[in-house]
Image (cartoon, rainbow, N blue to C red; front, side):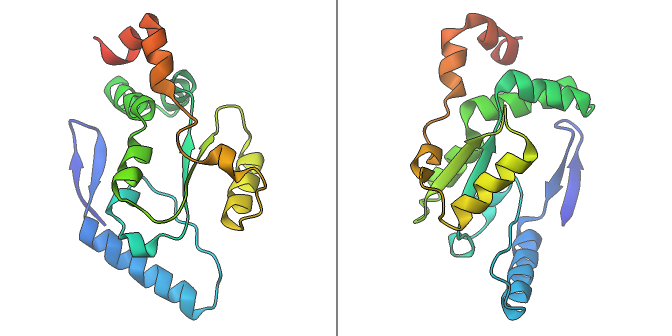
Length: 160
């Protein structure tokens, strides 16, 4: 599913057509097995055809915390900055908005949550059990405002 490696960006480049073909096979397999739910975690939801998406949940993270997590994983500085900038600008959410989906798009701030509580929120949103689901509708998380309000953050992530 990977077509090449981008040395400059230090990342794999996926073959969109192959990914979509594999997703269709996987979804068909789950449908044939009468499974109700298939959760696909990715950063390429913008290339997935709308008709294949039933739920959309974006996991967000406070930029400084994301920076620390990526450092611990051994990411190179340039890749860390690229990822943190994307988080600040809300790229994943923006790509989904541009898709003009007919379903709610949720976002969860994972900064101070453990994996179990995040999983519980996700399950509740998927099963439509979350009484306060509106608190997770996109637009509540705005890291860009923090950067605009704090020149130190702006210099750290946007100016060399």
